[in-house]
Image (cartoon, rainbow, N blue to C red; front, side, top):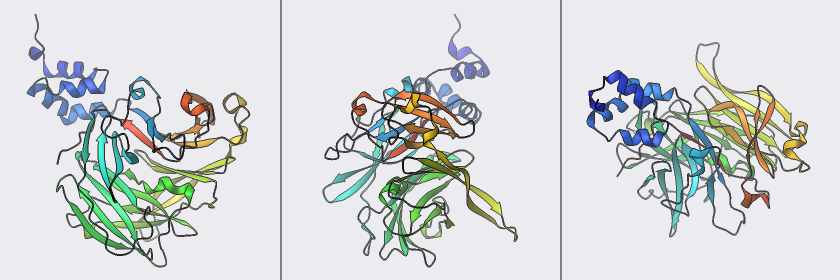
Length: 389
């Protein structure tokens, strides 16, 4: 009888590569030292990254505004239908994601605390208390949050808080690092005449930043127009040296019934703005070179005012006013998820086609929930570990 340990390394790697479930492959790392080093080897990890990733959306599904906030994973496939945040804290509020890591906040007495968890491996970490911000802040809920892993080292990551300080011309920067296990603080001044204001209701979701190429991005509001903050959390051990750039736009007309969704992909950052229940537009952040040879980034309108009234009644029935763009497909920048009263559909902005994704959850069919907070969730073939304090 042939023992698995007697197999050549290339044959064993091929067998492990074909393990159909990420969780099973994750457990295989602990069979032996040989298997651990093989699965952790750079060439094996590169092969795994080429396999199709499982993805879904985390949505706020609170039925009654008087109820505690509830978040759930849309059951896009069998592997995501059993995911939940109830394994460690049923009262956690999701405020951001990075691949399979979920950033939550929760209330302890008079202050907010944060935690990071992996719903797939059921690991979690409560972060130490946040240092109190000195000075008057713009508003108690005006806090821009974000976290990301180092592209070159997934086990190295930073959690960032940007707290606008009154009168809104500066940010109080707070960074928690998985390496130092401590908070670092600094102050970032905004270029005149910019000033941060509490975002309109429709932009609440933009308080959670997105990560792209080792940078964090937030869309902010100065009271009349939007601008984008680009921040490098891995710039230096000295938090005051971290690079911060301000980008104009995306330019859109603000309306009380507008909704904004931002998402990062391997090759771009895109924003979808829905105006009322009638149409939506898509913007993309692109890098350009100016006349002086300097690199700069600009927002470009790539899809302009797609009418929601054109879609087949097969999907939308008679509820013409209940068509909500939830957000982008987490791994396909050309696909948008859209919510109707009875189902969730996908729209391909390149092919201009609509397909049914799933039926709306039964407990939400009786009442239309706009899903004010929506976050992408991507499950890599090697789940991201959550470090311990």
